[in-house]
Image 1: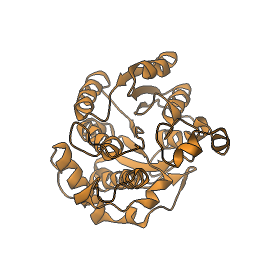
Image 2: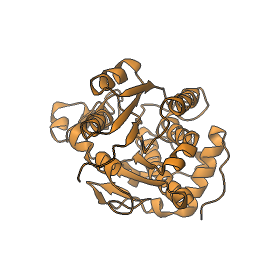
Image 3: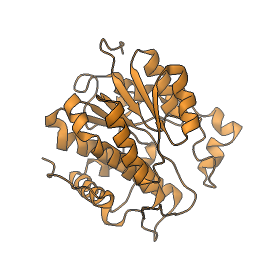
Amino acid sequence: MEQQDDPRTIVITGASDGIGAAAARRLSADGHEVVVVGRSAEKTAAVARPLGAGHFSADFARLADVRRLAGELREAVPRIDVLVNNAGGIFDRRELTEDGHEMTWQVNHLAPFLLTQLLLDGLLESGAAVVNTSSVAARLGRFRPEDLGDDRRWSPQRAYGDTKLANILFARALARRHGEQGLAAAAFHPGGVATNFASSTSTPLRFLYGTRLGRRLMISPERGAETLVWLAEGTPGRDWRSGGYYEKKKPARTNPRAQDGALADALWERSAELVGLSAGPPAR
């Protein structure tokens, strides 16, 4: 895709490492203003400094951090053209956050849901795009909105797959609810990327991501960031369809439940309830 004539302001969460950092470097090189967000203030600053980029730190396991981050972004970044919800992880055991939510659900879905909602007025004003990093693991998603993080059926892989399905449903719900106001949204799978993902867990994924042989079978963060960059630089309606799910810069198949509008609405309403927000009017 050709470089954009008008540079965009692009906020990327989970950008202290992996595809978030790789995308920040590529988008900055393409002339965009990048804002880097990560959990570690030191690592986030190290990514941002060579780019001359703004940077903020927040721990998505604490919703108070998300609310603080939203306030700081509203103050320091008056216009956001693209919000990339890229932060996430897989966790070794079922654990509740200080907010009372299962960790995987809070970090991978509830925190980005809250951040997006708190920035929504500005995103609508700028006609922004929201890009959610999902995964092929969304095909495993089988959650019920009333039982997010249910301990009776919890496993690291199941919780991860459930939240990655939620990332797609959230993008599609954003497009349905706010598309007529100019907001676009999409989700994507970056591929199997050689990062530190799952390296601190005892899940089978640790042996894929944490061994030399496994990492040789995977792609670089730079390649993994290509679809993220394509979505961030593209024009919805011309280059990609709002509400879509993408792999390798193309529409992709995923869990059939990702097409369930009633499930997307129920997830939205339950998520709003859990983070203490109004769900707003129903999707059209």
